[in-house]
Length: 183
Image (cartoon, rainbow, N blue to C red; front, side, top):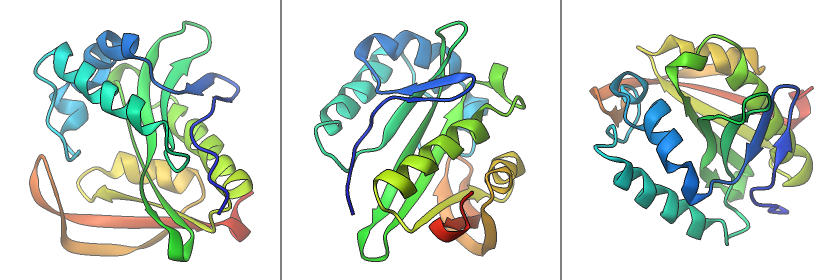
């Protein structure tokens, strides 16, 4: 492993970058306070922008560690912060990183998350030396699974009643991609 941490990544339409405390109002407005966005996540909608500020403050501290991979998604053309992608779990013995993501509803269905995820996977495989990148989703949230399919991940199965999120105990679909299969 060669942990490289969170550094800026640029794609055709996006800039993926570290968070700053000043991002709290946009994050709160576009996704952190939205019950529809957080419906399938493990954290509840933020009740106030102060909660969002506290969350971002904790992320800022984590950036000191080289094994932190956490980006805010910013539209190149408008400068708006509209989403989030991060490595939510690392299993170093098998060189595995698990991705998690979310974004504001106004940006759903435009291919932004697959674009961001492919860029992040390139960093994880080519720079950090991971061999496997995986992701999971509540089976009732097939749109997240569609992102996993679009980025080339292979469906590996369902863990029945394998997770707990804002809906309660749920079935969890798992996808993964190996470095050898990444193009």
